[in-house]
Length: 235
Image 1 (cartoon, rainbow, N blue to C red):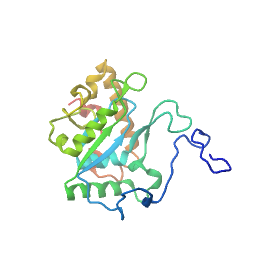
Image 2: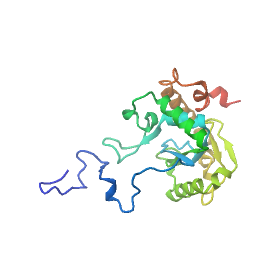
Image 3: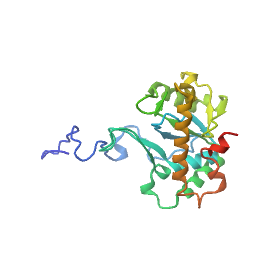
Image 4: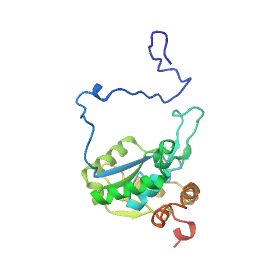
């Protein structure tokens, strides 16, 4: 809100706790006009996993990029929306469902086509919890996330060896400069492997339930790129 002098009161949360503003691009010194760049070498999908299950970084195949782009998974965190006092899992197709004109699979197919055409890599970067779910684990250290982003852009993470998470099917880099190796595979950070497995099954189920909304249109390639069913994960 603002007073009669149109001075903004940034401490007022009566309308929203997450204030936004817009202004002409030419207000930014040294802005590139027109704002047109080349095709990216790396595409980063950002999520905040309150379950503590997703790795801090995963390398995505084009099919996985489509699946996770369509899913648009993250968590509502206290302080970003009114009424939210603890993180809640949420899915928003293409991370912006309210603004889509076409079916989400259309945008996902365009993304994968561009990735293949330009040789781009896709990554799922998680800034959520590690060592347990919200209330037990801790938020992933910001300096680790920054180191991950740096390693993506430098190309070091592309060359890193990976392991496939048996439940989520994600390719997880096993080393990253500036990041402790033990946090890269989430299960190793939990005090109880059984609790991790139970929570991972829960998250995989949530992914499956959400993706059922799009399964009738999505290709078999996309459907198989998500978390594995319990029977498949046990193989």
